Image (cartoon, rainbow, N blue to C red):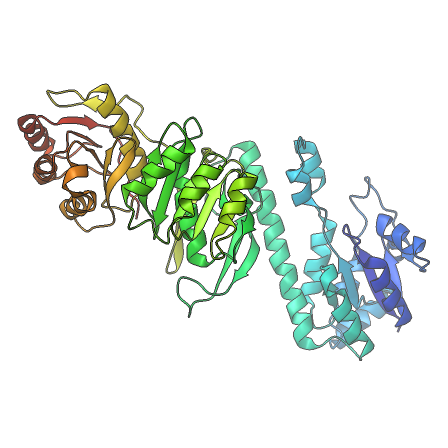
Amino acid sequence: MKKRALLSVSDKTGLAAFAKGLAELGYELVSTGGTARTLREAGLEVVDISEITGFPECLDGRVKTLHPMVHGGLLAMHDNPEHMAQLDKLGITPIEVLVCNLYPFKATILKEGVTFEEAIENIDIGGPTMIRSAAKNWQDVVVVIDPRDYDRVLEELRAGGVSREHKLALACKVFEQIANYDAMIADYMRKVTQAETLPETLTLTYERVQPMRYGENPHQQAAFYREVMPVRGALTEAKQLHGKELSFNNISDANAALQTLAEFGTEEPAAVALKHANPCGVGIGGTLHEAYQNAYEADPVSIFGGIVALNREVDAATAEEMAKIFLEIIIAPAFSEEALAILEKKKNIRLLELPGCGEPFPKGMLDFKRVAGGMLAQTIDDRLLADEEPRCVTDRKPTEAEMKQLMFAWKVVKHVKSNGIVLAKDGRTVGVGPGQTNRVTALDLAIRYAGEEKAKGSVMASDAFFPFSDCVEHAAAAGVTAIIQPGGSIRDEESIKACNEAGIAMIFTGMRHFKH
C-alpha cells in the first residue's frame, strides 16, 4: 500500500523542504488550495484533496477536508484488522503523516481595525478537526503542526520511523494547541459580545514568554506566561534594555510596582519604590527627580535592592540619583540617552522600557489566585472610592493640603498587603505598615518606620475600618493630623469620638481595599 502524507498549512515556513523530504521517502503528497500551489511552485508533484474525496472544495474553501476519505484515513487503527478491511472495502488509503497548522486567528484579532467578520472567517474548522483526529490515532499517524519539528521528524523517518515517544509528544502538542486556539476564540467572543465577566465555565490560555532559572526559591521550577491580547502598560509588554534576565520574584514585584504606579496615572510625575510586593516608598513631585527623591527619602533603608517604577522618561538628573544605590529594576516609559549612559555602568541593574507605564489598566480584567484543587477569580480592584464622595465624619474637616495627602495615602494603601497602614506627608509616604495580623501592629510598624519627626504632622490611611478606637489613639500619640479609612464598623462612633477629642479630621471612603 502506498504511503500518503496530507499537507494543509497556513504557515508555510520550511514547508517545501519538508515536503521534498517526504516525497524522496516515497510519500504521495496530498494537499489543499494555497498549500498545493506552494508545493507545485517548488517543483513537487501534488494530488489535490478533491481528487481523494471526489468532491470539490466549496464555500470559499470552508469545506474541503471534512470528508470520510480524509478522516477514515486518519482514524483507522492499523493493527485493527476490521478497520483495515473497511478501508480496503471503501477504497480509503491510510494517511501516515499529517502536516497542518491552523488559520491565524491570533494574528487576525491583533491587527489594528480588524472587523468581527474578519475574525470569524479566521476561525479554522477543518484544520482542528484533522489534527484532532490524527492526534487521537497518534500510534499510526505522525501529526506535525509546528515547522520547528520538521527536521527531527524527517530525520527519524529517514532512519526508519518516528519513535512512539515522539509521536505521543507531537499528539500532546496538538491538544495543547487546540485548547489554546479554542480558549482564544471564546475569550474574543466573550469580550466582543460583552458576555458575563465570570462565566459558568472559564478556560484560560497563556503563551510562555520565557522559562525561568527557578521560582520563588531555587528548588522551585517556574516560567513566565502572558495573555494572548497585549495589555498596554503591563510588564509583558516591557522591553529590557540592560541587565540580566528577570527572575520570578523580579517579575512578581515589578508587576506590583506597576499596579501601584497606575493609581497615579500620568498627570503628575510619580515614583514607586517596592520591596517584596509592598510599596516601601512612594513619591510625587513637580519633576520626576523630585518624585524619585520623595520616594527615596520615604524609606532610604528599604529601597535598597528594591524596584522603582516611574511614569516619566528618566532624565540624567534622576538617573544620577538612582545610580547612587543598588536597585534591582527600574521601569519607565523611556530613558534618555544620558540616563542610559549613567545607569548602564551598573552591571547588575535591569532597565525596562515600558510604554504606557503608569497608565490605568483596562477595565474588566480578571485577577486569579490558585488554591489547591481550584482557583479563585475576581475582577481587578480598579476603583478607588465608592460612588459617593469621601465623607468627613468628624467635627474638624481636613484642610485642602491634608485632603491632598489623604488621597495620596489612600492610593498607596490600596496596594499594601492587609492589614495595611500608610503614613504620608509632603507628597511622599513616610511610614508603611504591611501585612500584619492586627491593625494596631501595622500602625505601630508604620510609625516606627516614619520616626518621631516624620510621623508628626502626617496623615494616615487604613485599607479597612477600625474595629476599635485604639488605632486612632496610637495615631494621635504619634502626631497624625488626619485619617482616611473605609468606615463601616459597628464601633465607628468610638473612633469618631477619639478623633474629635484629639482634633484629628477623619474621612470615610465607603470602600475597603483588602489585599491578601
